[in-house]
Image 1 (cartoon, rainbow, N blue to C red):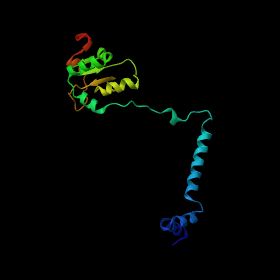
Image 2 (cartoon, rainbow, N blue to C red; image 1 turned 30 degrees about the vertical axis):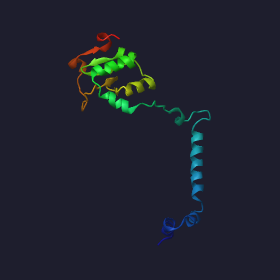
Image 3 (cartoon, rainbow, N blue to C red; image 1 turned 90 degrees about the vertical axis):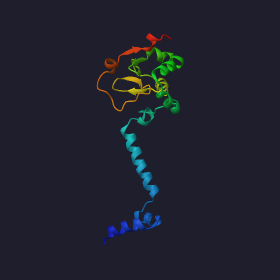
Image 4 (tube, helix red, strand yellow; image 1 turned 135 degrees about the vertical axis):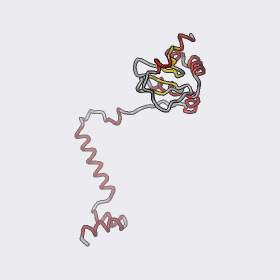
Length: 163
């Protein structure tokens, strides 16, 4: 055996004290040294007044009642519209019935509180159509390539059923 292999063998099988003696440093000293190197390189790379990226990307998610969301996803179109009319009249005014589904679209991005309410009501975000959609108990296995408005027709619930 060569000397290098013998040291490796001692490190693998020996107790902690022997490993420390073989290396010349304790494990905590090595860890502290690595942390110091990382800290110095981060400080040198960024100016002193720069904000660290970890502090700028904190997300505060609003809690939703998942049991209520699950129950609301099974509602049919009429029951969902009644729920929107009673609990969220602003969403009822924006609700578009496409076939048997209900869609809600906004001009821009909404705050987390609005998205949490929509999610709890059973809606999900469709990034392709840029709208919140509720399946009204009719779930599909995959997305369709056509525009559902053309095939199934659509209307705004507030126009047919004024609040």
